[in-house]
Image 1 (tube, rainbow, N blue to C red):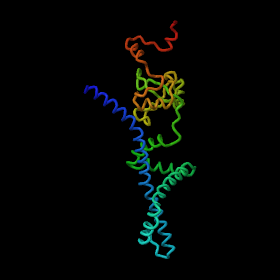
Image 2: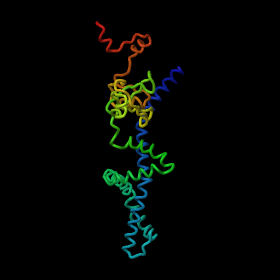
Image 3: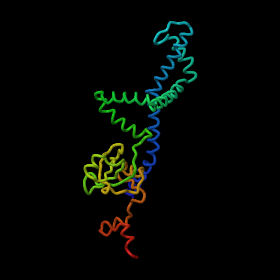
Image 4: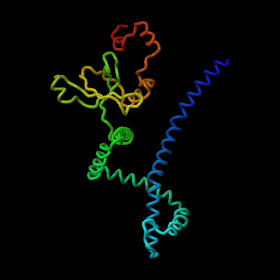
Length: 260
């Protein structure tokens, strides 16, 4: 009785954990992003906005202008304007507007060129050049709209003969390889588990790949889960597993050729 209770408790506890973690982690990530924007952008936007108001009031009253502004005016702005009207939240929302404006600027021709120059500087800085490319790779995969273009899902013998990996076809092979080998080549990206943002890019002969009837999302879920989440229609039945163990399994195509 105690052993059965432990089994039931473990099974239902894991089921409850699996149901609870996705929404909980989603909320945690959203809260973290909001706090990140508030701490590293919104706070400084708020300080700049207060500084502008302080300088405007000081100028209006004919007081001596300083970089920080008169302390009395600062206190008046904080207690008389910012706190009663909760302008801290306005600055927080303004931070999102500034991020949007930055995105529009980077998307322009001038902004794209300027941002490319800034990134090249990051790639040359000591220590930073070891960290920045990896961080950029992850953020580009998660946030940018222009994803890597995958045409279809295939299986390829990699990293050695007899071992099959799920891959995503990205393009045809390089011209030099086609000229040297005289064969039709394709480039395949092999995502790694459990982080498909990293992987290996290989070029193989077209006749050496097997097309899989899977969507890109199904292939990525299969990779992220380490093969636990089987794509629809790809899981074997228990009877087929038993046939494989006995060496009696026939592919469905072969079964159709056998007369009734």
